[in-house]
Image (cartoon, rainbow, N blue to C red):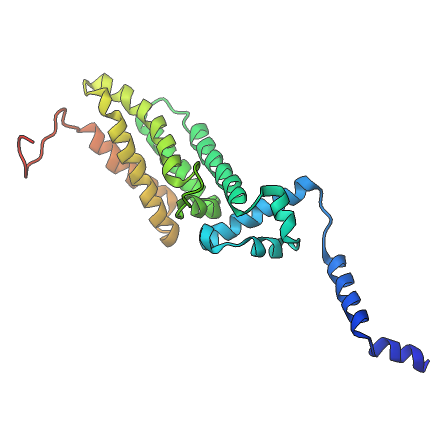
Length: 230
């Protein structure tokens, strides 16, 4: 009995290390390669949203996933690869939301749907929005907030182009106005993400009020009061 009691309470360093390894192994969940990849993407998304690209390390991604660094490298080749996958998914998710939302026939309703789709995304996918709006590293060529907004603006451009043509305005200016409208909604969305008031529908209504009522009373050939003739 004395020997059994001693073996329970007095352990060699080797036995202690073996016990720790066993405990760690028992708490680690076995995953398929596809499941592990999804887990790493989810963790990367959280970390990039919290800290940005530069402040996120492969070590921390691996630690949160309870895997070794080589596992992360095996799936993505490095931090840049993981970031690119995360951003690409967010770009597609946001564009899909906006494209799906644009179902109305009237231009004002389309503006409302586009504004609400973006605000819905900000509210429901906050981490994804933070990833897109953070500074992107130069080595990541595709996928940042600016490129996403450009894609959205091109969709809005088609709506405005048809509206301009029907009213006798120059349809070539639709691109300029679409960039202005989408930029306005995007910047308000970043502000609203932090304050979360007023409620989303109220924000969308005011955005559409400003853009639509301004568009409905456009001057065909606007000029500057402070610099006439220029």
